[in-house]
Structure formats: structure tokens, C-alpha cells
Length: 265
Image 1: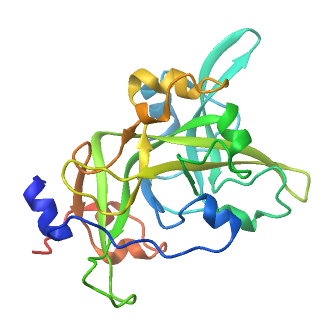
Image 2 (image 1 turned 30 degrees about the horizontal axis):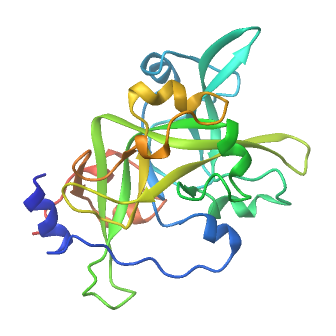
């Protein structure tokens, strides 16, 4: 899609509707409406090839998901150091980070995203960001746009799909949480930042993409050796964006038709 084409869909100023105010601490740590759905279709074996990794014991194969939603299990890439050997591993984790101090899992749906600007200091994310960073491999993600001129909060927002041919390596963090039944659950969150795009923006926040040359540094379980601004804003210009059907609005819908371009001119 061209710059002109995307701006035609977004409006002349290319600006999104401002987010509403949030109240709970967990909501202050993240924006639940940013990068709240994505598509992921690669198998564990394909991810292992793509990331020069091994399929770990905590990986569970699942069907392609074209409408991945919060709290669902998904594939992530982590770094492992075992018996003096460093390697990457594909594991399955639930989307929505649960801090070790959380009393129950309800907080997970509110911690699907972590603000890059404050991730190093927020209690919900601080420990995970320090030494448990991950790659969340996605085909593309969905974002919803509503022009500023449409003041009616109930007005239908137009969903867009943002993708690249090679997919996106979204910056994530992960945390183990012990459930009431004493079993361990692996959880993760996706980092977001202020959206800046060469072809306009759909939302005022966007997920961060980890370039291939920074994957090792990002996954290294030590304090981050590169600045966060070295990561890439996954917005139109770096990625392609096109409008899709509102069928994606419902988590009950799932299939390749969800990210097929539609004409909204």
C-alpha cells in the first residue's frame, strides 16, 4: 500500500484516536488495546529452522491461529544456557504476563503489552525485562483505527492488518508463575512504543520489532546491551498495512480470510 493509499484510509492527518484514561496499576503499565490480536501460523519445526533453535520440552504444537487473542497459548523464542551450552529454544507460553507476586491469573489479560518507556521500572515487568526477554514470532498483527472526527465512541473502528513477507520478530518478555495447583505457567508480554511511521500511523502505540542482527543481544539473559531505540517501530513504512474485515473483531472467528485485504474506499 502506498503512503497516499494508507493516508486515504486513516484520514488527512494520519492520526489515531487517543487512548482513554486507565485506572488500575496494571493498566498504567500497558495498553491492552495495542497489538491485542495477531496471526501466527508457523509450526514448531519451521520456527526452529527460522531462528536456528531447538523445539523445547515446554513447546506444544497447535493449529495455525489467525486471531491470536490474550491468554491463549502461543509460541515464543527464548535463550537457554544448559551444561555450558548456549542455544535458542521454541517454547509455548500464555499471552498475558503474570508477575510472580500475582495472587491469581486475572491480571494476565491486562498485561499483554508493556510500555518500552517504563518496562525497566514497572513492578509488573521489571524482573522479566532484566533477564527474561523473548521473541514473539508473528505473521502480522491487527490494529483498529477510528478517525478523530468520529466522536461517537460506539462508532465501528476499522481493523487493519500489519505484516511483512518475512514476518515480525516482536520484542517480548516472559515470566514463570506458580498456579494455585502448584503447577508452573509460562507467560509473556509484548513491548510497545510510541508509533512513528513513514506512511502514517493507525494507533498511537505500536509493537517493537527485533532486527535479525539484534536477536542475540535481545535474548541474552543479562542486562540489555543495546538501547531500546535500536529496535524497530513495527508501523506502516517498515511493514505493510491494509484494511481487513470486521470479522476479526470476534475471537470466535479464525481463518486465513481474516487478513485478506478489503476495499473501504
